[in-house]
Length: 305
Image 1: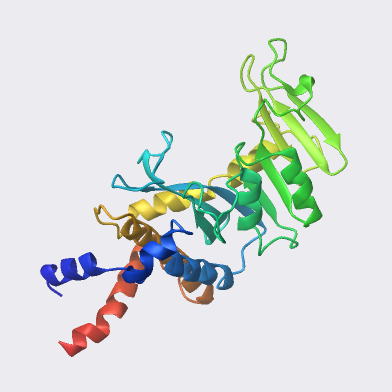
Image 2: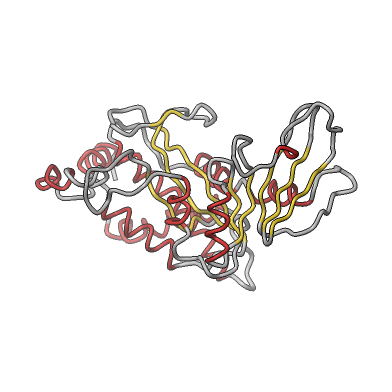
């Protein structure tokens, strides 16, 4: 395929019926990618059995074109882009569910709450009741969320913001607390931990998975913090993997940016699925897998020429 042919196809690519888009946009800001997105999410949900350790966080798809729901996240490398909430397997880094943040939707079937509690419940809708654990940061973690997940046989481990009303005063930072000291509290199935890494600082975690006061003898940190650190980075790892081998191209059209990101995630998921089927054969790393995949996709076209 010539470069001009490729650019023509890329410029002509659409994921919906352009003639009825304005009508559908009146009830869905994501109408330009809705059918593709729904099918992709369905395939992710039904193609793989997630492990017992899950994590939820945000991805940022780099984009600086015209878009009403572009986000600024200074902690991300790209800083500006389209925000995706993703559920990722903390062991294999398989993306099991995701949704795109587009602000407040018009009244209709796609007008859903953007509160952290509701986002988590939607992303976990097909895995609750399976005794899995969710790891998340302090934007998502809350006492009501932990209570609701316990009802659905799902545990949670996450950091808590210090302004949460459920946190007792004894767990807050204090100048008299010794460095590397830990403080534990228990209420039925819930455990709250306060760890002092520095003077007048505190890391507060809520866990419904742990129920003891175990502390690592080498680091002096509670075991719940070690577990949190080992499982919290699933989404960031997927984001980094997408950047290492990316199909993204510079564009001023946000639907194309979403399409490129979904292709990147699909490549990671496909590599995981392929390696799971190779019981006796050597697993392929992502570079080798993507190279083999691209060559197989081109075979028919090459033979025709």
